[in-house]
Image (tube, rainbow over all chains, first blue to last red; front, side, top):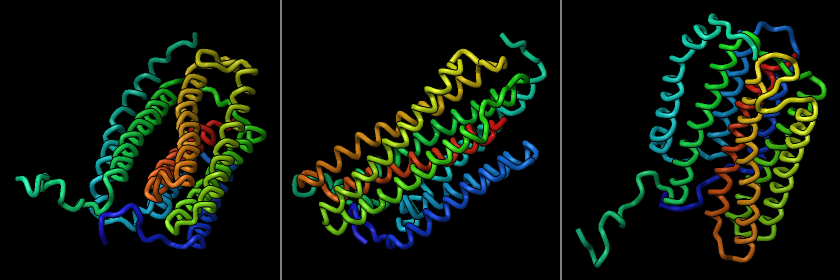
Length: 104
Length: 204
């Protein structure tokens, strides 16, 4: 493999299959939202499905599957770590809720 | 070190085996993903911390409209892939048609979004007003998050038009089409989080 703009790609048939899979995930998300699911369970389910959909998009639509692994390891783990670090703010959100600011 | 008047470093192969143009787009995407991630975390923080949060959406027509928008955007990613594949094979007219379809779908997404905004503004929603009586943060966050995404969509549509014309007139290469495709798929990827978190979690 040489330094080039153009990489080996799967066929349009594969892309259509991936697209259909994404449509199914979106349909499942909408079905979950219309069902009587607890808000915690709904949030967890939607996040899992969204990350699954994003992973598929990254691998196939954005061709990360067909690039050298170093590109993935350079870009994605650091980004995910940043997202994990942001989770430390939830405790303060809970504190803010307990303060019960009146509506303006 | 200088070799034949050039820096040796400039002659080294990229460790990622991609062009600097494509690597630059990847770096932009990671930075932009961090921006959207921070904004969505901010939304979650304020939502969780607001005892008087209100859910503005009904399954019909709001979620149905957002579902149509989602399918339109996903389909535009498929047509973009068609454009990239055609560009790789040097089929300029086919590339132009695929990219034209992507522009139409992207424009349709923007029109549906603006129509939704218009309806909400008509109901009294704004950056600082909540007609349901709860916290005004609902409107502020909704318009900010979806507005930033819409800005990306409109920028992408303009970019694809420029790339399509450039490729058709042989001023740009298949690499340009592929790099534009990366951006467009990223816009789609962001919506995969905006749709469930901003719409589906706010069904009344």
